[in-house]
Amino acid sequence: MIPFLDLKAQYRQLKPEIDAAISRAVDSTQFVLGPEVEAFEERFASYCNVRHCVAVNSGTSALHLALLAAGIGPGDEVITVSMTFVATTAAILLTGAKPVFVDVDPVTWTMNPSLIEAAITRRTRAIVPVHLHGLMAEMDEIMEIARRHNLTVIEDAAQAHGAEYKGRRAGSIGDLGCFSFYPGKNLGAYGEGGAVVSNCSKFARRISLLRDWGQESKYNHVVQGYNYRMDGIQGAVLDVKMNHIEAWTEARRSVASYYDQLLEKHRCRRPVPPAHSRHVYHVYAVGLAQRDAAQKALQAAGIGFGIHYPVPVHLQKAYADLGYGTGDLPITELLANQLLSLPIYAELRQEQVGEVVKELEKAVLAESASFDPRFAQRRLAG
Ligand SMILES: Cc1ncc(COP(=O)(O)O)c(C=O)c1O
Image (cartoon, rainbow, N blue to C red; front, side, top):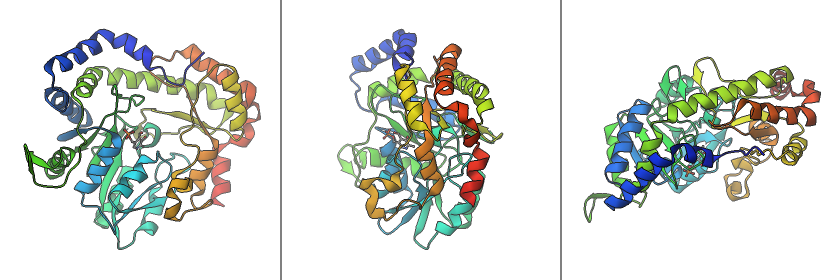
């Protein structure tokens, strides 16, 4: 049995530290915000190499407040991708703005910068690239287009804690960066959590107000806000985990590199990080034309897997009103049909990676010639 994700293995390793931190938070009865959260905010800002971090109660809230702080609202358009978790789109809709999707690059699976300009209209106000699976989008090109058109860039870094692009950390390149600390994330709370990071003190101040009912001081509400505050216990747990995030990230990168090594001969579609990127492998997905057969084989062998994501946002019933249909985003749709996420976490051992690949080999990889990603790219381009 190899689970897709093993949160218990991490807890076993950290139990004394985590239990002490939770106990400390409970003893202090500082259940909402407070010193544990502040300590974490300071450490996470420094980890992302930014001046400010404002902790909130989820990644979705982080995106919602980042968009509001940037002044996004009804009548505005925000360019993003459909190759993401629905929260990216949902947060844009929460502001009253309209999400506009561009397709992803067939090699990196992140926003294709060459498609952005065609999507810009006089209503466009912001771009939200998603650092999918832990690989940062091509930020130089995105920032250059945004600056030329006077657009705000909000990085959806929910899956990319510690990822780097040309030596710069996720969240530190755009005007604002948003993180999720959902338990299964590379940095996971023991409940819900999120944060917005920024170098701009005006944005940070605005987000601090908005997360706490717009209160400047108790019962003095200067803007209409929300209850998006982080729990004290989550701050305490996350602060403990900051001691380990780099070691876990390097362990994930080793697991990914072992998958790469074993899968290389099959030439199946797999993550191809550009040389200037540090991929943090929140997800390690492979593209398989016979994904159903692969799923059945893994299931029979007791190996966990995931699909991120089986139906892209633009084809979800809930977002049908946006007016997209099948064929509008061909690369996104191809990836949604083919990607299969394999087990990856810091504690996963090499022999377990070997077992996963062996099962895939038995089931589907024998016919690997048809999986050549370059073939798929040419076909799609044509
Ligand atoms: C890319 C992306 N954006 C946003 C979110 C939303 O984060 P949360 O679940 O913490 O609200 C998630 C995670 O679930 C995500 O993966």
